[in-house]
Image (tube, rainbow, N blue to C red; front, side, top):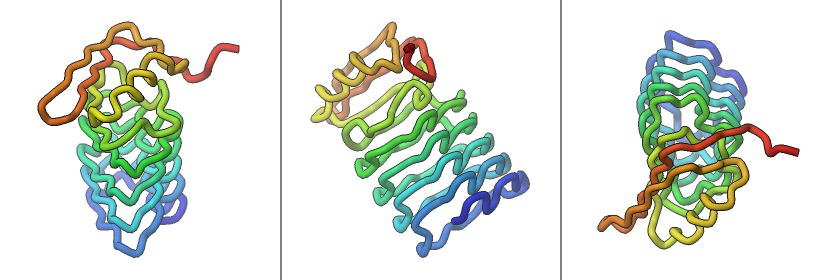
Length: 178
């Protein structure tokens, strides 16, 4: 889907993306505040910068296993989004991918820490679930990520083979101090 293809179409409530689509471009659905849910087909490998930014009505989105990258501020301002599942194929998450997602309380990662996950990608008081086998990697990430100054952290191993990490409070900043 091309850059700005549906940008500002606030009356758009639903869309079916055909299997022939391989990428969702820059600002493709930005400002589509009436869009409530979207299913991305398995053919898509990348979600562009600001692709769904400002889609404040978006309550659910299914990201397929084929997606490898999520662009900068891709879901910025999706305030109605409460939970999102990141497939294990995602290797890169852009700056501020989930910034302004005030309703986001849970992010489920199916694999290791994607490159680029940073302060702007996480909301404070968000619950993060990820496979136990990546626990050591996640603990290192939480402890050493210079963009997140974590103040409180709850860690709980669950029977589901997922490690549950809840960031209770975090001080966020966009850039590292120089």
